[in-house]
Image 1 (tube, each protein chain N blue to C red):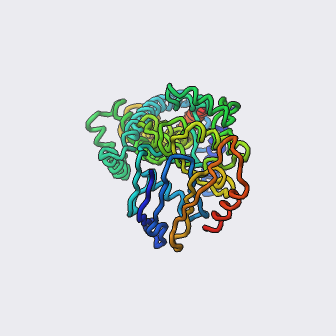
Image 2 (tube, chains in turn yellow, purple; image 1 turned 30 degrees about the horizontal axis):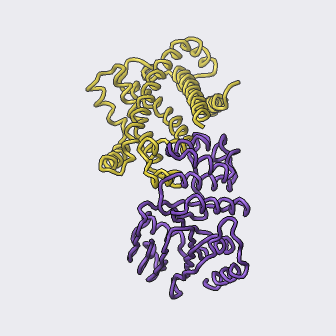
Image 3 (cartoon, helix red, strand yellow; image 1 turned 180 degrees about the vertical axis):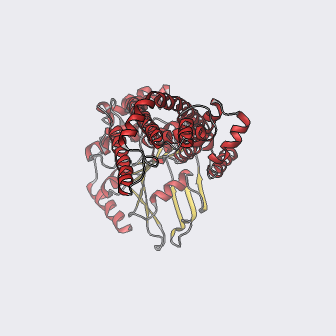
Length: 247
Length: 229
Protein backbone atom coordinates (compact mmCIF):
# COMPACT_ATOMS: atom_id res chain seq x y z
CA UNK A 1 0.00 0.00 0.00
CA UNK A 2 1.36 3.38 -0.96
CA UNK A 3 2.07 5.84 1.80
CA UNK A 4 -0.06 8.95 2.23
CA UNK A 5 3.00 10.99 1.26
CA UNK A 6 3.10 9.37 -2.20
CA UNK A 7 -0.62 9.99 -2.75
CA UNK A 8 -0.12 13.59 -1.68
CA UNK A 9 2.77 13.97 -4.13
CA UNK A 10 0.72 12.55 -7.05
CA UNK A 11 -2.17 14.84 -6.16
CA UNK A 12 0.02 17.96 -5.96
CA UNK A 13 1.85 17.07 -9.17
CA UNK A 14 -1.40 16.53 -11.04
CA UNK A 15 -2.85 19.77 -9.65
CA UNK A 16 0.28 21.67 -10.77
CA UNK A 17 0.15 20.10 -14.21
CA UNK A 18 -3.57 20.89 -14.51
CA UNK A 19 -2.90 24.52 -13.53
CA UNK A 20 -0.28 24.74 -16.30
CA UNK A 21 -2.77 23.35 -18.83
CA UNK A 22 -5.42 25.83 -17.67
CA UNK A 23 -2.88 28.62 -18.26
CA UNK A 24 -1.85 27.21 -21.61
CA UNK A 25 -5.34 26.81 -23.03
CA UNK A 26 -6.81 29.79 -21.15
CA UNK A 27 -4.21 32.22 -22.50
CA UNK A 28 -3.80 30.33 -25.77
CA UNK A 29 -0.04 29.85 -25.24
CA UNK A 30 2.02 28.00 -27.83
CA UNK A 31 3.53 24.53 -27.31
CA UNK A 32 6.92 26.22 -27.27
CA UNK A 33 6.05 28.00 -23.98
CA UNK A 34 4.00 25.24 -22.34
CA UNK A 35 4.01 21.87 -24.10
CA UNK A 36 0.73 20.02 -24.51
CA UNK A 37 -0.10 16.75 -22.71
CA UNK A 38 0.91 14.70 -25.76
CA UNK A 39 4.33 16.34 -25.86
CA UNK A 40 4.84 15.77 -22.11
CA UNK A 41 3.93 12.07 -22.43
CA UNK A 42 6.24 11.70 -25.44
CA UNK A 43 9.14 13.36 -23.59
CA UNK A 44 8.37 11.15 -20.60
CA UNK A 45 8.69 8.03 -22.72
CA UNK A 46 11.96 9.22 -24.24
CA UNK A 47 13.74 10.55 -21.16
CA UNK A 48 12.25 8.66 -18.18
CA UNK A 49 15.14 6.17 -17.95
CA UNK A 50 17.82 8.85 -18.25
CA UNK A 51 16.13 11.21 -15.78
CA UNK A 52 15.35 8.46 -13.30
CA UNK A 53 19.04 7.50 -13.28
CA UNK A 54 19.97 11.16 -12.83
CA UNK A 55 17.56 11.51 -9.89
CA UNK A 56 19.03 8.36 -8.30
CA UNK A 57 22.50 9.88 -8.72
CA UNK A 58 21.27 13.02 -6.97
CA UNK A 59 19.51 10.97 -4.27
CA UNK A 60 22.71 9.08 -3.42
CA UNK A 61 24.57 12.36 -2.93
CA UNK A 62 21.65 13.85 -0.97
CA UNK A 63 21.41 10.80 1.33
CA UNK A 64 25.18 10.81 1.92
CA UNK A 65 25.10 14.56 2.62
CA UNK A 66 22.10 14.16 4.87
CA UNK A 67 23.73 11.33 6.84
CA UNK A 68 26.94 13.33 7.15
CA UNK A 69 25.09 16.36 8.47
CA UNK A 70 23.08 14.26 10.97
CA UNK A 71 26.27 12.75 12.39
CA UNK A 72 28.04 16.12 12.51
CA UNK A 73 25.04 17.96 13.96
CA UNK A 74 24.64 15.29 16.66
CA UNK A 75 28.31 15.48 17.67
CA UNK A 76 28.41 19.28 17.63
CA UNK A 77 24.94 19.45 19.25
CA UNK A 78 26.09 17.27 22.17
CA UNK A 79 29.10 19.59 22.68
CA UNK A 80 26.96 22.68 22.06
CA UNK A 81 24.56 21.80 24.87
CA UNK A 82 27.35 22.26 27.44
CA UNK A 83 27.30 25.28 29.72
CA UNK A 84 31.04 25.74 29.18
CA UNK A 85 32.58 28.36 26.87
CA UNK A 86 32.82 25.83 24.04
CA UNK A 87 29.07 25.19 24.23
CA UNK A 88 28.26 28.93 24.17
CA UNK A 89 30.73 29.46 21.33
CA UNK A 90 29.14 26.69 19.23
CA UNK A 91 25.61 27.95 19.89
CA UNK A 92 26.46 31.55 18.96
CA UNK A 93 28.46 30.45 15.90
CA UNK A 94 25.66 28.15 14.71
CA UNK A 95 23.04 30.89 15.09
CA UNK A 96 25.16 33.38 13.16
CA UNK A 97 26.35 31.05 10.39
CA UNK A 98 22.87 29.63 9.72
CA UNK A 99 21.64 33.17 9.08
CA UNK A 100 23.99 33.32 6.07
CA UNK A 101 22.63 31.73 2.86
CA UNK A 102 24.85 28.71 2.21
CA UNK A 103 23.91 28.73 -1.49
CA UNK A 104 25.85 32.00 -1.79
CA UNK A 105 28.99 30.15 -0.70
CA UNK A 106 28.47 27.39 -3.27
CA UNK A 107 30.51 29.09 -6.07
CA UNK A 108 33.52 29.30 -3.72
CA UNK A 109 33.20 25.56 -3.02
CA UNK A 110 33.11 24.81 -6.76
CA UNK A 111 36.17 27.00 -7.35
CA UNK A 112 38.09 25.25 -4.57
CA UNK A 113 36.91 21.66 -5.05
CA UNK A 114 35.88 21.54 -8.69
CA UNK A 115 32.51 20.36 -10.03
CA UNK A 116 32.73 16.71 -8.91
CA UNK A 117 31.06 14.65 -6.24
CA UNK A 118 32.80 16.32 -3.27
CA UNK A 119 31.35 19.77 -4.04
CA UNK A 120 27.80 18.45 -4.42
CA UNK A 121 28.14 16.43 -1.23
CA UNK A 122 29.54 19.35 0.75
CA UNK A 123 26.85 21.77 -0.38
CA UNK A 124 24.07 19.25 0.32
CA UNK A 125 25.47 18.60 3.79
CA UNK A 126 25.96 22.30 4.55
CA UNK A 127 22.43 23.26 3.50
CA UNK A 128 20.74 20.80 5.85
CA UNK A 129 23.43 20.87 8.57
CA UNK A 130 22.68 24.21 10.23
CA UNK A 131 18.90 23.84 10.62
CA UNK A 132 19.57 20.35 11.99
CA UNK A 133 22.24 21.61 14.36
CA UNK A 134 20.04 24.39 15.71
CA UNK A 135 17.16 21.99 16.34
CA UNK A 136 19.42 19.41 18.00
CA UNK A 137 21.07 22.04 20.19
CA UNK A 138 17.62 23.37 21.09
CA UNK A 139 16.42 19.91 22.10
CA UNK A 140 19.57 18.93 23.99
CA UNK A 141 19.85 22.18 25.96
CA UNK A 142 16.27 21.97 27.25
CA UNK A 143 16.36 20.28 30.68
CA UNK A 144 13.82 17.59 31.53
CA UNK A 145 13.79 18.61 35.18
CA UNK A 146 11.28 16.05 36.43
CA UNK A 147 13.54 13.21 35.24
CA UNK A 148 16.97 14.77 35.63
CA UNK A 149 16.41 15.98 39.22
CA UNK A 150 17.01 12.52 40.73
CA UNK A 151 20.25 11.96 38.82
CA UNK A 152 21.50 15.47 39.57
CA UNK A 153 20.79 15.26 43.27
CA UNK A 154 22.27 11.75 43.63
CA UNK A 155 25.32 12.85 41.57
CA UNK A 156 24.76 10.20 38.93
CA UNK A 157 24.32 12.59 36.04
CA UNK A 158 26.86 12.51 33.23
CA UNK A 159 26.77 13.83 29.68
CA UNK A 160 25.73 10.51 28.16
CA UNK A 161 22.80 10.06 30.55
CA UNK A 162 21.72 13.68 30.10
CA UNK A 163 21.84 13.39 26.30
CA UNK A 164 19.95 10.10 26.44
CA UNK A 165 17.20 11.52 28.66
CA UNK A 166 16.72 14.62 26.52
CA UNK A 167 16.88 12.73 23.23
CA UNK A 168 14.44 10.08 24.49
CA UNK A 169 11.96 12.65 25.76
CA UNK A 170 12.09 14.47 22.41
CA UNK A 171 12.39 11.50 20.08
CA UNK A 172 9.34 12.49 18.05
CA UNK A 173 10.71 16.02 17.57
CA UNK A 174 14.11 14.62 16.55
CA UNK A 175 12.53 12.31 13.98
CA UNK A 176 10.51 15.21 12.57
CA UNK A 177 13.65 17.35 12.34
CA UNK A 178 15.62 14.59 10.57
CA UNK A 179 12.76 13.93 8.12
CA UNK A 180 12.33 17.66 7.51
CA UNK A 181 16.01 18.17 6.82
CA UNK A 182 15.97 15.38 4.20
CA UNK A 183 14.13 17.71 1.82
CA UNK A 184 16.79 20.33 2.46
CA UNK A 185 19.53 17.83 1.57
CA UNK A 186 17.77 17.10 -1.73
CA UNK A 187 17.35 20.83 -2.39
CA UNK A 188 21.02 21.44 -1.58
CA UNK A 189 22.21 18.73 -3.97
CA UNK A 190 20.00 19.92 -6.83
CA UNK A 191 21.07 23.54 -6.27
CA UNK A 192 24.72 22.45 -6.33
CA UNK A 193 24.17 20.49 -9.55
CA UNK A 194 22.26 23.38 -11.02
CA UNK A 195 25.15 25.78 -10.35
CA UNK A 196 28.12 23.84 -11.62
CA UNK A 197 28.08 20.04 -11.33
CA UNK A 198 28.55 17.61 -14.20
CA UNK A 199 25.98 15.00 -13.14
CA UNK A 200 22.66 14.58 -11.37
CA UNK A 201 19.15 15.81 -12.04
CA UNK A 202 20.04 19.45 -11.32
CA UNK A 203 22.57 19.26 -14.15
CA UNK A 204 19.89 17.71 -16.45
CA UNK A 205 17.44 20.50 -15.53
CA UNK A 206 20.13 23.09 -16.35
CA UNK A 207 20.54 21.59 -19.83
CA UNK A 208 16.73 21.46 -20.32
CA UNK A 209 16.58 25.10 -19.25
CA UNK A 210 19.15 26.09 -21.89
CA UNK A 211 16.98 24.24 -24.44
CA UNK A 212 13.83 25.95 -23.07
CA UNK A 213 12.27 22.47 -22.88
CA UNK A 214 9.58 22.65 -20.19
CA UNK A 215 8.43 19.06 -20.88
CA UNK A 216 11.84 17.74 -19.79
CA UNK A 217 11.76 19.92 -16.68
CA UNK A 218 8.27 18.59 -15.80
CA UNK A 219 9.50 14.99 -16.18
CA UNK A 220 12.52 15.80 -14.01
CA UNK A 221 10.24 17.36 -11.37
CA UNK A 222 8.07 14.24 -11.39
CA UNK A 223 11.02 11.98 -10.59
CA UNK A 224 12.47 14.41 -8.03
CA UNK A 225 9.13 14.57 -6.20
CA UNK A 226 8.57 10.82 -6.37
CA UNK A 227 12.06 9.90 -5.14
CA UNK A 228 12.06 12.56 -2.38
CA UNK A 229 8.66 11.34 -1.14
CA UNK A 230 9.95 7.75 -1.11
CA UNK A 231 13.03 8.84 0.85
CA UNK A 232 10.85 10.66 3.39
CA UNK A 233 8.61 7.59 3.72
CA UNK A 234 11.71 5.45 4.37
CA UNK A 235 13.00 7.88 6.99
CA UNK A 236 9.64 7.96 8.78
CA UNK A 237 9.55 4.17 8.73
CA UNK A 238 13.09 3.94 10.16
CA UNK A 239 12.10 6.56 12.77
CA UNK A 240 9.08 4.50 13.83
CA UNK A 241 11.18 1.32 14.17
CA UNK A 242 13.83 3.23 16.15
CA UNK A 243 11.20 4.73 18.43
CA UNK A 244 9.47 1.37 19.00
CA UNK A 245 12.77 -0.34 19.82
CA UNK A 246 13.91 2.40 22.18
CA UNK A 247 10.61 2.55 24.02
CA UNK B 1 20.32 19.55 63.63
CA UNK B 2 18.75 21.95 61.08
CA UNK B 3 18.31 25.63 61.77
CA UNK B 4 17.13 28.51 59.63
CA UNK B 5 17.83 32.00 60.92
CA UNK B 6 16.55 35.31 59.61
CA UNK B 7 15.56 33.97 56.19
CA UNK B 8 14.43 36.61 53.71
CA UNK B 9 13.43 35.66 50.19
CA UNK B 10 11.49 37.06 47.29
CA UNK B 11 11.39 35.80 43.71
CA UNK B 12 13.36 37.97 41.27
CA UNK B 13 11.15 40.40 39.37
CA UNK B 14 8.33 40.27 41.92
CA UNK B 15 7.49 42.57 44.80
CA UNK B 16 5.93 39.88 46.99
CA UNK B 17 8.06 38.61 49.81
CA UNK B 18 7.89 34.87 50.39
CA UNK B 19 9.88 34.82 53.64
CA UNK B 20 10.41 37.74 56.00
CA UNK B 21 12.84 37.26 58.88
CA UNK B 22 11.83 33.64 59.20
CA UNK B 23 13.29 31.29 61.80
CA UNK B 24 12.82 27.56 62.16
CA UNK B 25 14.51 24.62 63.81
CA UNK B 26 14.49 20.85 63.78
CA UNK B 27 16.29 19.51 66.82
CA UNK B 28 16.73 15.77 66.25
CA UNK B 29 16.56 13.07 63.57
CA UNK B 30 13.11 11.63 62.87
CA UNK B 31 10.03 12.05 60.77
CA UNK B 32 9.16 15.75 60.74
CA UNK B 33 6.73 17.85 58.74
CA UNK B 34 6.60 21.13 56.92
CA UNK B 35 2.97 22.15 56.92
CA UNK B 36 1.03 25.15 55.68
CA UNK B 37 -1.55 26.43 53.23
CA UNK B 38 -0.97 26.30 49.47
CA UNK B 39 1.30 28.98 48.05
CA UNK B 40 2.86 29.90 51.38
CA UNK B 41 6.36 28.81 50.28
CA UNK B 42 6.81 25.22 51.47
CA UNK B 43 8.44 24.03 48.25
CA UNK B 44 10.54 27.19 48.07
CA UNK B 45 11.79 26.58 51.61
CA UNK B 46 12.50 22.93 50.75
CA UNK B 47 14.57 24.00 47.76
CA UNK B 48 16.47 26.55 49.88
CA UNK B 49 17.22 23.89 52.52
CA UNK B 50 18.54 21.38 49.99
CA UNK B 51 20.57 24.03 48.15
CA UNK B 52 18.59 23.96 44.89
CA UNK B 53 17.64 27.61 45.29
CA UNK B 54 19.79 30.59 46.12
CA UNK B 55 19.13 34.31 46.24
CA UNK B 56 17.97 34.40 49.86
CA UNK B 57 19.47 36.14 52.85
CA UNK B 58 19.83 34.64 56.30
CA UNK B 59 21.45 31.35 57.21
CA UNK B 60 20.66 27.67 56.96
CA UNK B 61 22.81 25.72 59.39
CA UNK B 62 23.10 21.98 59.65
CA UNK B 63 24.69 19.82 62.29
CA UNK B 64 25.23 16.14 61.51
CA UNK B 65 23.52 16.50 58.13
CA UNK B 66 25.83 16.23 55.14
CA UNK B 67 23.57 14.89 52.44
CA UNK B 68 20.16 16.41 51.79
CA UNK B 69 17.90 15.02 49.08
CA UNK B 70 14.70 16.60 47.85
CA UNK B 71 12.00 14.64 46.08
CA UNK B 72 8.67 15.83 44.75
CA UNK B 73 5.58 14.17 43.39
CA UNK B 74 5.90 15.15 39.74
CA UNK B 75 9.20 13.38 39.18
CA UNK B 76 9.40 10.74 36.47
CA UNK B 77 11.66 7.79 35.70
CA UNK B 78 13.24 7.52 32.26
CA UNK B 79 10.94 5.67 29.88
CA UNK B 80 13.47 3.41 28.16
CA UNK B 81 13.49 0.70 30.83
CA UNK B 82 11.04 -0.98 33.17
CA UNK B 83 10.52 0.19 36.74
CA UNK B 84 12.27 -2.96 38.03
CA UNK B 85 15.33 -2.41 35.84
CA UNK B 86 15.50 1.22 36.85
CA UNK B 87 15.32 0.39 40.58
CA UNK B 88 18.04 -2.28 40.18
CA UNK B 89 20.21 0.12 38.21
CA UNK B 90 19.96 2.83 40.89
CA UNK B 91 20.40 0.62 43.93
CA UNK B 92 23.91 0.36 45.40
CA UNK B 93 24.98 -3.32 45.53
CA UNK B 94 24.94 -3.45 49.34
CA UNK B 95 21.25 -2.41 49.44
CA UNK B 96 19.61 -5.20 47.46
CA UNK B 97 17.87 -6.48 50.61
CA UNK B 98 16.56 -3.01 51.35
CA UNK B 99 15.26 -2.82 47.79
CA UNK B 100 13.32 -6.07 48.29
CA UNK B 101 11.88 -4.78 51.57
CA UNK B 102 10.81 -1.51 49.96
CA UNK B 103 9.25 -3.28 46.97
CA UNK B 104 7.12 -5.35 49.38
CA UNK B 105 6.21 -2.49 51.72
CA UNK B 106 5.44 -0.05 48.93
CA UNK B 107 3.40 -2.67 47.03
CA UNK B 108 5.52 -2.36 43.91
CA UNK B 109 5.94 -6.03 43.03
CA UNK B 110 3.29 -5.88 40.29
CA UNK B 111 4.76 -2.69 38.80
CA UNK B 112 8.29 -3.97 38.23
CA UNK B 113 7.76 -5.14 34.65
CA UNK B 114 5.89 -1.97 33.63
CA UNK B 115 7.15 1.29 32.22
CA UNK B 116 6.80 4.25 34.59
CA UNK B 117 4.35 6.07 32.32
CA UNK B 118 1.95 3.12 32.48
CA UNK B 119 1.64 3.26 36.29
CA UNK B 120 -1.10 5.06 38.21
CA UNK B 121 -0.16 8.33 39.92
CA UNK B 122 -0.03 6.62 43.30
CA UNK B 123 2.23 3.85 41.97
CA UNK B 124 4.46 6.46 40.32
CA UNK B 125 4.85 8.37 43.57
CA UNK B 126 5.60 5.20 45.55
CA UNK B 127 8.21 4.11 42.99
CA UNK B 128 9.84 7.52 43.02
CA UNK B 129 10.02 7.64 46.82
CA UNK B 130 11.40 4.09 46.99
CA UNK B 131 14.36 4.92 44.74
CA UNK B 132 15.26 7.92 46.93
CA UNK B 133 15.18 5.80 50.08
CA UNK B 134 17.82 3.56 48.51
CA UNK B 135 20.29 6.45 48.24
CA UNK B 136 22.71 7.98 50.72
CA UNK B 137 21.01 10.77 52.64
CA UNK B 138 20.87 12.32 56.07
CA UNK B 139 17.77 14.37 55.39
CA UNK B 140 15.13 13.55 52.80
CA UNK B 141 12.63 16.27 51.99
CA UNK B 142 9.44 14.73 50.62
CA UNK B 143 7.24 17.25 48.82
CA UNK B 144 3.81 15.63 48.48
CA UNK B 145 5.68 12.39 47.81
CA UNK B 146 2.78 10.22 48.88
CA UNK B 147 0.05 12.12 47.05
CA UNK B 148 -2.53 9.89 45.35
CA UNK B 149 -1.62 6.99 47.65
CA UNK B 150 -4.48 5.45 49.65
CA UNK B 151 -4.52 6.04 53.41
CA UNK B 152 -3.80 2.44 54.44
CA UNK B 153 -0.77 2.08 52.13
CA UNK B 154 0.43 5.54 53.13
CA UNK B 155 0.36 4.57 56.81
CA UNK B 156 2.19 1.29 56.10
CA UNK B 157 4.87 3.14 54.14
CA UNK B 158 5.43 5.90 56.70
CA UNK B 159 5.61 3.46 59.61
CA UNK B 160 8.05 1.25 57.72
CA UNK B 161 10.21 4.24 56.84
CA UNK B 162 10.33 5.23 60.50
CA UNK B 163 11.37 1.75 61.57
CA UNK B 164 13.89 1.25 58.74
CA UNK B 165 15.62 4.63 59.10
CA UNK B 166 15.45 5.65 62.78
CA UNK B 167 18.66 7.72 62.61
CA UNK B 168 17.80 9.59 59.44
CA UNK B 169 15.71 12.72 59.10
CA UNK B 170 12.65 13.29 56.97
CA UNK B 171 10.85 16.52 56.26
CA UNK B 172 7.42 15.59 55.02
CA UNK B 173 5.42 18.19 53.11
CA UNK B 174 1.72 17.37 53.07
CA UNK B 175 -1.63 19.10 53.25
CA UNK B 176 -3.18 16.36 55.34
CA UNK B 177 -3.65 17.62 58.92
CA UNK B 178 -4.51 14.13 60.17
CA UNK B 179 -1.43 12.32 58.87
CA UNK B 180 1.02 15.10 59.77
CA UNK B 181 -0.36 15.30 63.33
CA UNK B 182 -0.26 11.52 63.72
CA UNK B 183 3.09 10.51 62.23
CA UNK B 184 5.39 13.51 62.59
CA UNK B 185 7.57 14.43 65.51
CA UNK B 186 8.23 18.12 64.93
CA UNK B 187 5.86 20.15 62.79
CA UNK B 188 7.00 23.39 61.20
CA UNK B 189 3.84 25.33 60.38
CA UNK B 190 4.65 27.88 57.71
CA UNK B 191 2.34 30.88 57.56
CA UNK B 192 1.94 33.91 55.33
CA UNK B 193 4.81 36.42 55.38
CA UNK B 194 2.34 38.96 56.74
CA UNK B 195 2.00 37.00 59.97
CA UNK B 196 4.48 37.28 62.78
CA UNK B 197 6.12 34.93 63.49
CA UNK B 198 6.00 33.34 60.07
CA UNK B 199 6.76 29.92 61.51
CA UNK B 200 5.18 28.14 64.44
CA UNK B 201 6.69 24.90 65.71
CA UNK B 202 4.44 22.20 67.09
CA UNK B 203 4.95 18.72 68.45
CA UNK B 204 3.23 15.88 66.61
CA UNK B 205 2.34 12.49 68.05
CA UNK B 206 5.23 10.71 66.31
CA UNK B 207 3.12 7.57 66.15
CA UNK B 208 4.99 4.28 65.72
CA UNK B 209 3.80 0.81 64.84
CA UNK B 210 2.04 -1.01 67.69
CA UNK B 211 1.77 2.14 69.79
CA UNK B 212 -1.59 3.14 71.27
CA UNK B 213 -2.92 6.37 69.79
CA UNK B 214 -3.95 9.00 72.31
CA UNK B 215 -7.13 10.36 70.75
CA UNK B 216 -7.21 13.47 72.91
CA UNK B 217 -3.64 14.50 72.06
CA UNK B 218 -4.27 13.69 68.42
CA UNK B 219 -7.29 15.96 68.20
CA UNK B 220 -5.54 18.71 70.15
CA UNK B 221 -2.53 18.62 67.80
CA UNK B 222 -4.77 18.81 64.74
CA UNK B 223 -6.62 21.74 66.27
CA UNK B 224 -3.34 23.53 67.04
CA UNK B 225 -2.20 23.00 63.46
CA UNK B 226 -5.37 24.40 61.98
CA UNK B 227 -5.35 27.35 64.40
CA UNK B 228 -1.72 28.08 63.54
CA UNK B 229 -2.75 28.96 59.96
